[in-house]
Structures are given as C-alpha cells and as structure tokens.
Image 1 (cartoon, rainbow over the protein chains, first blue to last red):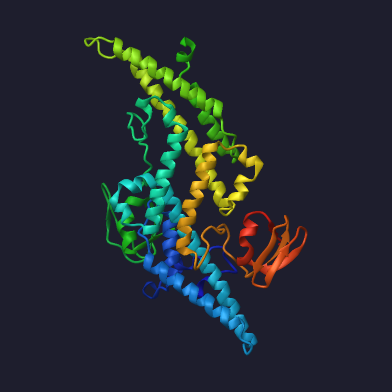
Image 2 (cartoon, rainbow over the protein chains, first blue to last red):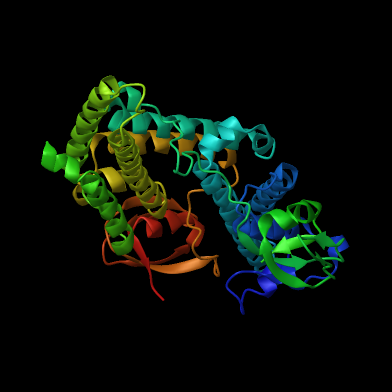
Length: 225
Length: 203
C-alpha cells in the first residue's frame, strides 16, 4: 500500500503500476488500480472484481478501526503518531480509488441499462447490486419516456422498441470497435488481423480497437492506458 | 395544414438544437413544454395523414411515395422527442453527481427547479432512491457519492465557510460552521460540504 503515497508528491494520479514490472507480486491495491484504469478506458463493462474489492474494503475497515483505537493510546510516541497519520492518508487515497472505480462502473451500468436487461453475457460480468441498479434504472428511464412522450403519441407510435429502417438502434450497446491504448504487461501471443499479425512484446504500447485485445485484457496480459 | 406538411421536421430540429445549445453552453435550459406539445400535435396530424393515404391507395400502384416520406418524418420526430428528453435527464443526473447527491440542492434551488418539468422532478427523486439503495452496499466503508475529481493529498484542509451550514459532527467534536469563519478540519468529515458549496478550500 505504500507505492501510491510515494508518488503523491509528483503526480496527481498514482500511475505507478505502469512501470511496475514485477507482475507476480502485485499488491491488492496495485491490482485494483489496474482494474480501475482498465475500467475507465474500456468501452465495455469489464468483469466485476468482487473478491478483490471486498478484501480491500475489509482492509479499509480494519485499518480505520485500528487507527481509531491507536489514536487514543496515551503511550504512543511521536513516531507512532506519524505512522498513524500515514495510514489514515493511505486509507483516504484507497477510498478515492475504490469510489472512482465503483462510480465508473455505475456510469456504464446506467448507460447500457436496457442492453444489460436483455443480454446474459453482460449480466454475468456485473455484481448483484449493479444488476439491481441496472434493472431499476431501465424501468425508471422507460417510465419517464412513457410519461413525457410516448403516452401522448398515437397508439402506433407509442412503443419504445421499434426499429425503423435507416436509423440507429434504440438500445445503447458498448462500442467494442472503439480504439484504446494498450500496454503489454508480458509477451503476448500473436494477434491476427485481416492481412497481418502483430506480436506484442512486453512493454509494447499500441492503439487498436478494443475488440482485438479483449481476451488479452481479461487474461491480464495487457492493460489499458 | 399544407404549410405544416412542407416543413415537417422543423419543430424537431428546433428541439434538438436546444439540446445542442445546452451541451455547448453547459447549462440546463428550461423545459420547452410548448415545443414538445406542438411536436406531439404534429405527430398526431401526420398519423392521420398516413392513415388516409394508406386507406386510399390501390394495390397495383403500390404505396404512394408520400406515405414513405410521412413515415420517415414520424420516426424522425419521435426520435428527436426521445433524444431531447434523454439528453435532459442525462444532464440532470450529471448535476445530481456534481452536488454529491444532495437532493435539496436541486429541488430547493428555485433557479434549477423552475427549469424542470414535473416529470423530471419525479425522475430525479426516484433516481436518488435508486442510487441510495446502491450506495447502501458500501456504507460501512465509504460514501460512493463523495467527490472523485481530485485524489486527496492531505488529511486536513483549511476551509472558509461560505454559507451557514449548522452543526456538523467531525473528528474534533461538533463544530458550528458559520459564514465567514475558517476551520482546519479533517477532509473526510466535511468533503460533502465542499462539494455542495457550503465550504470553500483555502489554498
């Protein structure tokens, strides 16, 4: 948990994991930071990291409790107080990342709410709470459209799901063709495109459609920048 | 009626222009009830025109070209109506998050309130309860509606009170924040008050 505070003085966002080449001894925090960045850059909703998140939340709770009891300790030395302060600071910073991560997902859940309700593969990737929110949100939005527009239109026009020709569909789906910057965390198996292949070595950075690297991202071979 | 037909889509274009202006100026404009109503009237007229054309054509010639045009106009108008309303609730949700989910800020502020339609007020109330339900998942550890614009750099922050906000429980006990005063407080205790505009950070 110390890496983020070390970079605090120089950068606004802790981006340490990009330069973190020791892939095998990732701390939970650096894993979450990576998932957070991936989530922020991916057009689609990535699989929920429930275990990781709940272990970090537990950790935050235990740390906060420990801080509470230690602060009242009369025998604590000057040095202890500085340590306590550092822990508190770190807890606040971790909370910030968790909050931003959760909100990023929530934003996408709302955006794709109607699509989520119809698609099972995406439902499998999100948490129960997110699914419940998607369902509530889809109903809320439908009801709003019904109240303000659809109920006043003639019967033949009053449905939300029509698919007129020459028009984009009514349901917002994740745009998997959107280009993303991708950074190889380790040597990747060759990617095949229409006419050529690309082999990404560790440390390689390139720009390509999200759909091409989706599987690599899920395996943790690459991260998004 | 004949002049109406010549300008199908005009009203819808006006409506979409409002959304666009709202995005460009980054403001929520007043709900344009009269334009929405006249667009809905146009939809009903178009529907009648389409029905009379449908009943009138003979099988050999196929549907008259006018029907295709009317139907395209109907779909377009409907899409524009939905886009307008959808854009507004998107902005309303943005506003909700920038004030940290503080409903009184949206609903008691006359300036904002006067721009919303009654349905939009209902919408944001229900949205709020949906978010509150989601938030309760995390309530033991953190408040997900707190600010996510800047990562925290210090535990404590010097704040200047801009508006009276009454007695607030903080780490140092309860503090009565009165306009004009300054306090050094724990950021986590009062962050929401900064977001809601009661306190200002002194830098």
